[in-house]
Image (cartoon, rainbow, N blue to C red; front, top):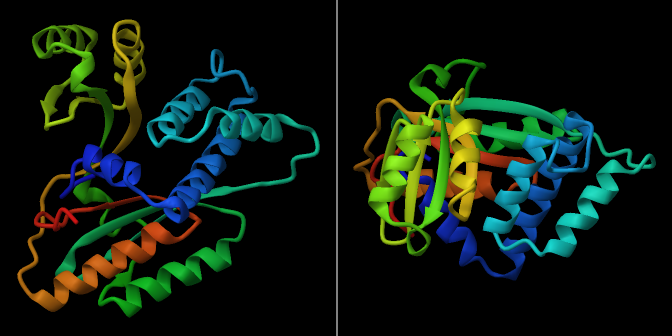
Length: 244
């Protein structure tokens, strides 16, 4: 999110080709399976985590049939898929801080992939906590600008406990603390169509890259990380990342 706002990530995903969309759907399917198993229910009305993942799936244009099929599969007694949530931390070129959240069914495979990517593209994979202190956890709720009046949304969001609101050409971004996230989301959901809602990381400080080789290597590192099926989210503090 940091260096790039969350909504730019969503726009890139919405413009993805068929192969990229298939990868996105695979990643979200894993999140759905984990949400159903951890929440003990395939009903989003009683499983708030599943409800959030479904919202994310729809924001990325995942077909409703795919969502329903994945929920049914996850809730079935015969489902043996087990995914472990692992967070990796490290540095990219010139000390850019990078955090990678993964869901994997093979810890050794994923760790090997992460180490290879960081080494190959001018960085190094560090120990847990090596860059985590540079980021703050916050809730992010996106609402299409055509769906809301800015003044009304600001009033509703702040009254519900949000910390801040910003916007670009397409979205309003409502930022909350992790603790206030569910309450704010529920309050806004009653009045607005939410495009995406999740808790993620924001960098406290940012790193600018000026060397062309570092920019190229950092771009390739992020591409490789985001292309990996096990990787769910990538956070970094690269401030001047190119839009494309």
